[in-house]
Image (cartoon, rainbow, N blue to C red; front, side):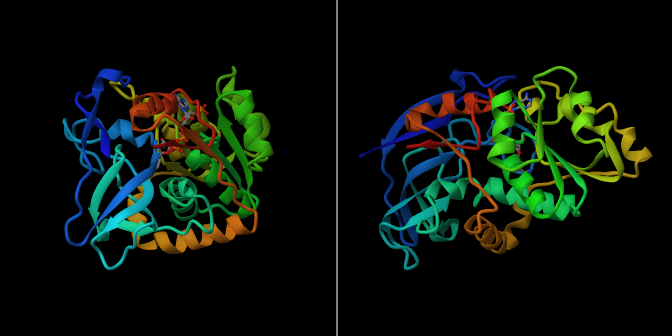
Length: 331
Ligand SMILES: NC(=O)c1ccc[n+]([C@@H]2O[C@H](COP(=O)([O-])OP(=O)(O)OC[C@H]3O[C@@H](n4cnc5c(N)ncnc54)[C@H](OP(=O)(O)O)[C@@H]3O)[C@@H](O)[C@H]2O)c1
């Protein structure tokens, strides 16, 4: 058995190029006492990975040059030197872009694959869903009858954020790239409308479907989209800065020019990091399971094949918007 690993060997300048990565083979690690050997089955492909490749201060340490790329994964226990885990159990973990990993029992969580497919624990029941849950409910505080706008609406976080706002009785509008994605957002996710930012006149398109203005904006994209929405917010609006994927490959990211709209509208713009809520993950997952079971929350997945060697291509495809739903790499 060999362990294929993707190592970060160069920091990108702008877009990620293939020469940032090296595919290496190593031996399958032996678990020490208290450790569990896991065979990763699915690797989460996340926009945040772009940030982890950069040097400098952030909410988490950068991946060091020469290290295996950081990634959340789900997989099966192959060998356990822990009382808490048995061979064959499914778990979620920070398993990295590789086939096998040995980790201490404290860094591994059991998942219930009778309830849903294991990869859903990387999407709606994983970091993406939790980000949407806490960002929308705690920071967005949507109230029935309000208008909630969501960028990146066809993606992993955006899809869940919108469905939660719908559950709270809001009018929910998405922003996504292309007519196919917009159709999916309305027909499969139940949003009231979705506008295509790749078409002209985004501001007019939003105004048309949000005639009463925007009360909550859940922003995954940043850049020009954020700037445009700032001109359409209502008094006391809440803007959740969840991410800014349009800026991650920019050498000099640009901030919003229209920020004075926050002053005029006594509005609030707040950044969120999902990890701050870790103590409440279990209760949020329990709640989302109920919504899934009752048919209120769908869990679209975008599964790429090709195993560990396909990781560099998968990450590029995420930034090119090839995914609808949560992108994972099967390995
Ligand atoms: N704060 C936190 O704790 C936290 C946690 C998880 C994720 N996030 C953030 O949440 C956001 C969404 O993450 P996700 O995992 O759900 O990804 P995702 O939305 O599933 O996938 C990324 C999507 O971004 C869109 N995109 C790519 N480049 C773009 C551009 N230049 N302008 C506009 N849209 C662009 C593409 O959709 P289109 O085809 O529609 O363009 C693509 O499908 C990211 O910004 C991520 O960093 C934050």
